Amino acid sequence: MRTSAPIKVIVHYPKTEEGRQELARRVADVHADFVISSINKLNCPIKQKLELLQAVIDTTKGTYKAPEAEQGQKPRKKHQEMSL
Image (tube, rainbow, N blue to C red; front, top):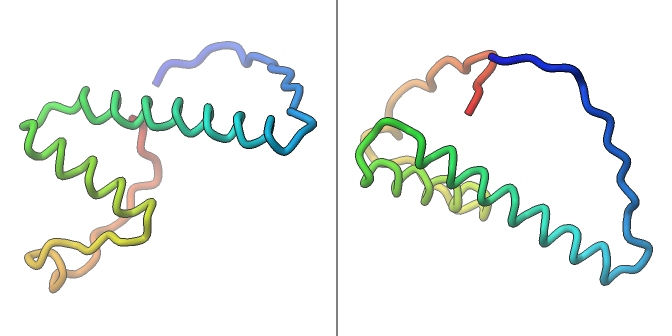
């Protein structure tokens, strides 16, 4: 993992509700672009990438259900850290 000097960022938050909603929409757009870019960089078939993207979408909506083959299995150990 690469390390660099920390960068200080000053953010002037919007003062209106409309401005806060616009900021939230823009942050969501940047986050979605990052997720898609990270998935595209994976070394796996396109079908698997699409399934992963759909799982991410379903998880954020709260509708994700594990495939039948995985439902009866024991949960896997969680990794301490994951970098995308």
